[in-house]
Image 1 (cartoon, one colour):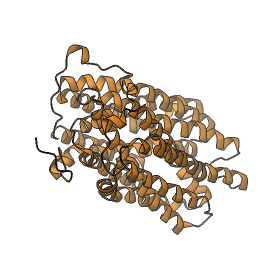
Image 2 (cartoon, rainbow, N blue to C red):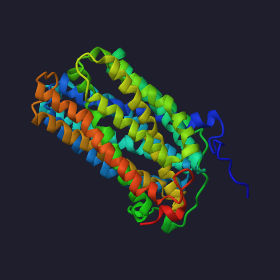
Image 3 (cartoon, rainbow, N blue to C red):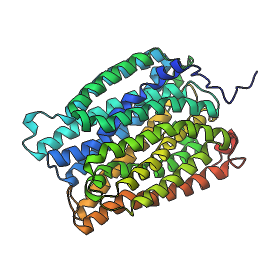
Image 4 (tube, rainbow, N blue to C red):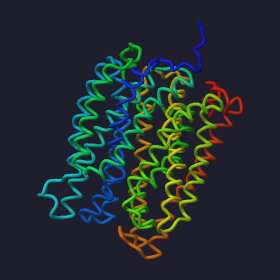
Length: 443
C-alpha cells in the first residue's frame, strides 16, 4: 500500500470539493458572532436588561444547549450509519429553523418588549431553540469532515477548509450589523445558510460505514474511555474559556474603556481578517513542527496580545488595532488546530466512521460550557464591581480591563502548562512528527 503524500490535500482534492464542504462554516460562524457577542450588548443597551439577569439567562440557555450536545452527537452518529444523505436532510431542516430563530431573537414581538421579564423569557426560550438547531448543523458538519479521514496534515487541511470560510463569515458579521443593521443581517444569514446547505449536499461524502445493530448508537460516554480525549478536552476547556471571556466583553471594552464605539467595525474586521488570513500560515507550520507545538506558539502570542491590552486607555486606537491583529492570528490557530488534533484522536482510538458525532458532541459541549461560564460568571461579577454599560468610574473600568485582558492571560498560561504537561510530554518525539496511538492512550 502506498503511503499518502503529506502535502496532498487528501479527501478534499480540489478547491470545488473544499468549498462544497467548507462553505457551511461561513453562515455558522456568521450567526455565532451576533449570538455570542452582539446579543448580550443588544439586550443590555437597547432594552435596558440588567447585566446580572441577562448573564443568568445566557448561562442557563447555553448550559441547556451544552448538555444536549452529547445527545445530538450520538444521534448524528446514528444518522451517518444510515447514510450521509440522512444526516444532510436533518441538517437542512435544522438550518431553516436556525434562520427563523436568529431573526426572532433580535426582533422580539412588541408584546414582550414592555417588560424586562417578558424580554428575558422570550430570549431564554428562543435562544435555547436556536442553540439546539445550531448544534445539530454544527455536529453534522464537523462529523462529516472528520469522517473524510487523512493523515495529520490532511486533517488540518480539512479543518482549514471549514474554518477559513468560518472566519470570512465572522468578518462579514462583524461589519454588517453596524453598516446595514440587524434586519439585513438576518436576511443575509438566511440566504447564506440556504446556499451552503445545498453545496454540502454536493460535497465529497464520507465513506460508507455499515455497522452492526449493536454498534448503531455508540455509548454516550465512549469518548471518555479514551485517555487522549480526556487530556485534550482539559486543554481545550482552559484555552476556550480564556478566549470566550474577551469575546463576551469586547464591545463593552471598546465603547467604555477605549471610548471608540464608532470604530467597532475596524477592530472586529482586523481581528477576524487576521484570523482568516493566518490559517494557511498555521497549516504550513504544522507540516514543520506538528500540531501541538504550533498550537502552543499561538497561545503564547495571545498572552502577549491581551497583556498589552491591559495597558491601554481612551483613544489608544492604533495600539488596539495591532492587538486585534495579533490576537486574531492566534484565533486562526485556535479554530484550526484543536479540531485536527481531535480528528486524529478519534482515528487512533479506532473509533473512526462510527463515533465522530459522540466526540464532537462532547467537544461542542465544552465549547458552549466555556461561553456559558464567560457570560454567566463574568457579567454578574462586573455588575458586582458597579460596572454597567456606559460607566466611566475608575474602579468599574479597572474591573472591566482586568476581566477583558488579565483574566484571559492567566487562563491561557494555565492552558500552555496543560498542553505541555498533558500532551507534548506524551509524544514519542519533540513534537515534530505525528503522535503514535500508544502515546495517545497512555493514562
